[in-house]
Image (tube, rainbow, N blue to C red; front, side, top):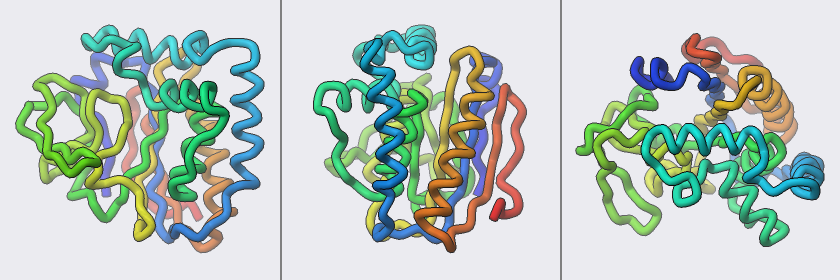
Length: 235
């Protein structure tokens, strides 16, 4: 499996830092509660002194969304949407241990994290501008087509797995109970994003191997426009 960014995305967003992991050997039985608690605690401390819209990580994504013609309060990056819901409701729903863990990490770092079922991806996953004829399956089962120029995650089958760069997964490739392999992507655009995404993924890797001791992690790093492909397992 490969993950990359189109050249024009790289050129238009030189501030973008991204890291990705391919995780093999997961299941829905793991208990991640011990790792989630301190992560939500970090979010609690930050939200106690400022709303999510004041976080520099979120403000940077709002500026990025504005630059591509999206109203940032209509289309929120995934971490802002999670933080906003968490602030209002005091908790997030339990979905799947991998998703729950990624959501908690996203809360703590205020950085969007996407998780895709690797078995549902065809060929390479590329973040690129949409042509407009790609297919996106909503959770309702309806098939949509992105607007030309939208930033999407698309594979070689021309399926869009996320629209408008919001990292909200499609119904087709969402992580579910039967998922055994997942592609996880963390992206940031704020000042110091490369350091933050590095710390995020290192923390996430530690939690992943604790929850799934037999899991194999393949790492892909895309930092400040420098890309490598997923190579040998990191454990």
